[in-house]
Figure (cartoon, rainbow, N blue to C red):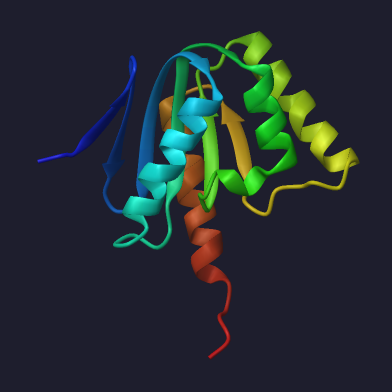
Length: 140
């Protein structure tokens, strides 16, 4: 049985082994950021590495407060990598501008972020990132 969290019209669930799947409906706002972070904290007790796949086909916008929080404190999203798919042109443009502003201000994310067109591309993006992470030698 899959456990699902519902935040308004948006839904979140874990897809084994390490993907947190978000179907966002409406605005991506501060409440959703905090709700996602809480889910991630809970799941990290048994899944130390998590990747976020965000289905943004029904995301209407990203609020100014959410943009500010993500730009100033990107660690609020505790994922090893996050990728969105299906975002509108305006949402993609906003995300690109946020990324550039963070880079210019020296607030680059430690976790990779991607934007792709389709769910299959999002899953491939996570698989590539997972493979890169597993290929990095670890100190013993």
